[in-house]
Amino acid sequence: EAQVTQNPRYLITVTGKKLTVTCSQNMNHEYMSWYRQDPGLGLRQIYYSMNVEATDKGDVPEGYKVSRKEKRNFPLILESPSPNQTSLYFCASSLIKGSDEQFFGPGTRLTVL
Amino acid sequence: GQNIDQPTEMTATEGAIVQINCTYQTSGFNGLFWYQQHAGEAPTFLSYNVLDGLEEKGRFSSFLSRSKGYSYLLLKELQMKDSASYLCAVFYNTNAGKSTFGDGTTLTVKP
Image 1: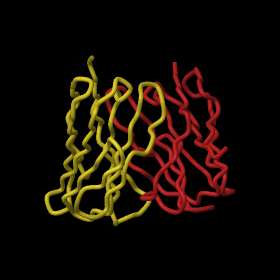
Image 2: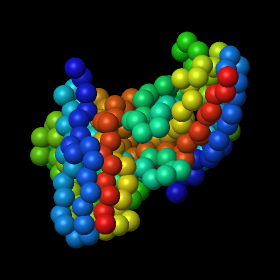
Image 3: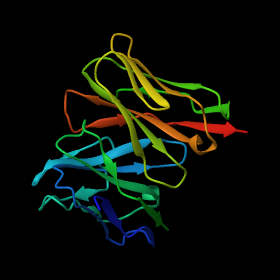
């Protein structure tokens, strides 16, 4: 089944404890992206990747890192999480570029205490 | 930034027609998406407009006017399951990877 998977789906952590949210797609898509969604707001783009070893900042990259060492995986790293990073996170992928239809993962609900 | 405006909430009756509007800055426009998102779930693709005009797909249609920076999503024969948030998203040709989403319109369908 073609899909985007994220792990974990739910995470409660404490300020300053490094964490990684994994994202994987099995559709051989070149483009991948991370978004966060806060109550009453739409999606805000954190980072995106046009292909392996090609990443770039979205609108809200502060406090986050990403890597794209292989096409299928695009992990989101929070080196020192803070409470303002409590949010719902979505990973998405599309065939070639961001303006192709994006397929979204199920979301990761992160709480930073 | 490139502001995208859409109404926060709308209410409609089952079986009726509803139009959700979206306005955006026109400079550098590349294409516009509509996504549907049920509460607590991931967004799912509805439509993509890059040229002016109406794109019809079953009960859902999407319209684009590039010169006016305006789009709408038209939902016909509303069903209870259409209660969801509808997100307008724009890509600008300054960078094919960067997207801007509106805050979403929460549609409530009542019996």
